[in-house]
Picture 1 (cartoon, helix red, strand yellow):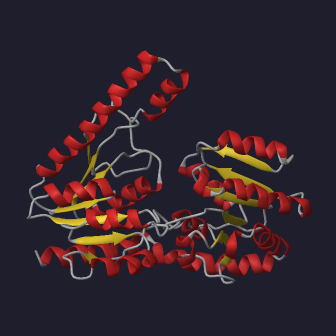
Picture 2 (cartoon, rainbow, N blue to C red):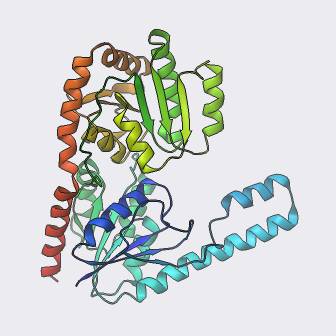
Picture 3 (cartoon, rainbow, N blue to C red):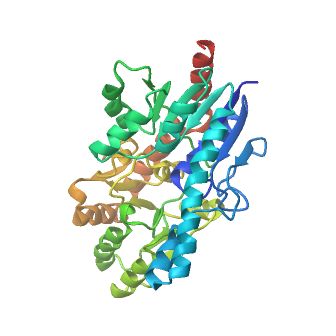
Amino acid sequence: MCKVTILALHLGYGGVEKAISSLSNILIDKYDVEIISVYKLYDKPAFYIDNRVKIKYLLDAELSPNKKELKDAIRTKNPIKILNEGLKSVKILKLKSSKMIDAIKSIDSGIVISTRIEHNKLLSKYGNDNLITIAQEHTYHNENEKYIKDLVESCKNIDYFMPVSQMMTDFYKKYFEGTKTNCIFIPHSLDCIPSEVSTLENKKIISIGRLSPEKGFDDLLDVFKIVNNQKKDWKLDIIGDGVLKDHLINKVKEYSLQDNVILHGYKDKEFINKQLSSSSIYVMASHEESFGLVLIEAQSFALPCIAFDSAKGACEIIEDKVNGYLIKDRSKKDMADKIIKLIDDIEVRRYMGMQSRENSYKYSKDNISYMWFEFLQCISSKQ
C-alpha cells in the first residue's frame, strides 16, 4: 500500500488542522497515512482522526509554543522569567526546524503533503528525489507581494501546488509557469451530510469561528444591533473562542444585547451540529477567508448564508441571491437589511436553504474522495 505523509504544525483547533483531519480520514481507506506533527498541544487531536492513521509528534508536550508566556514575562518585567522563557523559545524554534528536517530526510518513498510555507521550504530542500511532493495553501494572500513571493519560492522543488480554492489556484498559476510545479485544485470535503435539515422556523441566527480580528465578529455585533432594533425576538448564537472574547462580551453589554446574543465559546462538533440544525440564517463577517468550510457545513443543514464579499473564499460557495447574499464594500447596513429580508420572508429562506443544501452535495466525502483517489492514482502511475 502506498504511503501518504502529511506534515503539520500541530493538531489543535484551526482551519488547517480541520482540513488535515478530513483529508486523513479520506485517504486512509486506500493509503497508509501518517501525520507528522511538530507540536503536541493536547492529549488527542482536536478533530476526529481515524485510528488507523498513524500520528507522530516531533516535540514533547512540554515543548509547546510559549509566545504567551514570554509576552507575560516581558509585561511583568520579571528578568528571570524573561530569561527562562526566552531560552525556552529559542530551544523550541531550533528543535522545531531540526526535528522536521530529520523527519523529512527519513521519508524514503511515497507521497508527502505539506500544509505550511515553512514545511514547503524544508520539503523542497531535504525531500528525497523519489518522493511525490504536494504543497497545500490554506491562507489567502491579500495581494501581499512578499507573502506571495515567499510562498512561490518555498515550492521551487515541489511537484504539485494545491491552493484551497479555485480562485487562488487561478491566481497562482501564472507564478508557476515554466517551473516543475503544477497547480491543482481539490476542494475541502464535508465529513458528512446530515440526514435532517433545519426547518428554518426558529428565530435564530448563527455564526461560527475563531474570535480574532480577521473574523469580523466585532462588525457582526454592529450588524446585529441594527437587526435587533427591528427584530427584538431574534437571537444570535456565536460559537468559538479567541483573543477578542472579552472585548465582544463587553460590546454585547454596551449594546444591551445580553438577552439576544449568546457567546458560547468553543464547542464540540455535536453541539455545533445541533445549533446549525435549529438555526435559520448563517452569517459570516470575516474580512478574509481562503475557503470557508463552515459555510458549506451550514449549507448542508439547508441554511441560507450571508457574507461580506471581502471574504473571497465565500464567493465560491455563496451564489448571490440564490443560496444567500454576498455583501459589497463591507456595508453593515446592507448586511442587516439582507438579514431582515430573510427574517421577513420564510419562503425566500426556504428557497435559498434548498439551494444551499443542493450546493453542499458538491463537497460530500464521496465526491471529494473520488477526486483525491483519481488524482493520486494518476500522479503515482507517472512516477
